[in-house]
Length: 565
Image (cartoon, rainbow, N blue to C red; front, side, top):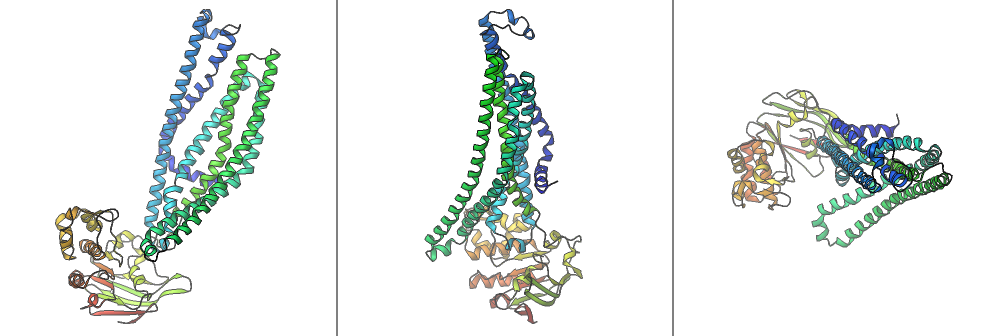
C-alpha cells in the first residue's frame, strides 16, 4: 500500500465510530439514486405516448385507456413526485453526511489539542506558534474534506455511474460505448494534473501558515512595535507575506481551473458525439425521440458523476497535504516519555547527580550539576542571565530531561515516574505570570479543582492578594485575563502565588517570583513564602536580595556550572 493510501485510510479512521450513521447515509444514497434513474421516464412517456403515437406500456395497466389530458396530468405529477422524493432523500443524505464529517473533524481537533498539551516544552520552544494554530484550526478541515468531498463523493459518483451505465446499456449499446470512451481521457487528465495540484496546495497552505504566524507574532509584540514606531515596517512585512500567499493560492487555483477546463472539453466532445449519433438513429427509426431524451438525460447525469470522480483526485490531493501537516503533530516524538511509577507520599529528598543538558548537540546549558535537597530545605539559585538557572529548575517537573546524569526523587530517577503523578508533587511559579480567561477564583483553584471558597480566600490572603481582589467589581467572581478586567503585573503574580499556596504541594519551584512586585508587596510575599516553604523542598531562582533573605543555602551558577553551596 502506497504512502498516500496509508494517509487516506488513517485519516478516515477518525470516522469509524460513526459506522452506523454512515450505513444509514448509504441507504439514503441508494434510494436517491433509484429515484434519480426514474426521473426522465415520465417525460419520455409523455413525448412518445401522449404527444406521439405510441401506447403507454402495459406495466401502467389501465392508464393506457385514459384520455390524453388525464395521462398528461398524471405524468406531470409523476415528474414532480420523483423530483420531490429524490430531492428529499438527497437532502437527508447530505445533511447526515455533513454531521458525520463534523463529528470526525471534532475528534481530530481533540486529538491534536491533546497531543499539543502532552508534547514537551522543548518541542513548543522549537515550533512556530502561529503554524501550530493554523494546523490545529484550519488544516484539520482536511479530514472533513477527505470524508465528504473524498469518500462520500467517490462512493456516490461511482454508484450513480454504475447504475447509469447499466440502464444506458439496456437502452442503446453503441451510444453507451461512445459515452464510456471518455473514461481513459479523464484518467490521463487526473494523472497529468494531480501531482501539480497536490504540490501547489501544500505550498499554498505553508504560505497561509506564515501569514497566521505573523499576525500572532505582531499582536504579541505590539507594545514594542508602537513604542519604536515600526508600524509601517510591520505592515510592509505583512503585505509581503500576504502577497506571497495570494500568489501561491492563485497558482493552486490556476492548476485546478486548468484541470477543470480540460475535463470540460472532454465532456463537451463526448456530449456532441452522442447527440450526433443518437440523432442519426432517431432519423433512421432505430430509436424513439423519447428514449433519446432519456439517454441524453442519463448522459448528463453520467457526466456529473464522471466529473465528480475527476475532481475527487484533486480534492484528495489537496486534503492529503493538510492531513500530513496534522499527522506531523500527532506523530511528533515525545522527548519526555511517560514513566510507570508514582512517587511515594511525603517526598523526603531530591538529588541531582551529574546533570548535564544541551538544547542542541555541542551546546551545553548545564554541566555536571550535583546537588541534594532534603525536606524542609530551600535553596536559591543565583547568577547571571543565561547561566542555566531556569533550565535546572524546569527539569524537576520534567519539562526537559537531562542529556547526561540524572535526577532522583527519594532514590528513584524522575524518568521512572508518571508525568502527571510527578507534577502533582510540585507547585510552579514562573517569572512571567500566567492568567487564564476565567474568574479570579477559577484562576487560583486551577491546580486544585473542587477547592472551597474558604480555601481559595485563605490562599489569596497568604499571597497578599486578598486586598486588591476585594476591590474588583465581583471580587473573587470577577473575570480576568484576555478581554476581561486588567491587572497589573504585580497583581497577576500574586494570583499565581495564591495558586501555588492552594495546591499545597511538597515541592515548591519558583522562578523569580517577586520580580514583578513593588518593595512593600515583595516584603510581604517573602514572609509568606518562608511560611509556605516550611517543611517542604524548595528551589528558587532569584536575583533580588529580599527573595533570598533568610535562606540558609544560596547556590551560585555560572556558565552552566554550580560554583558554590
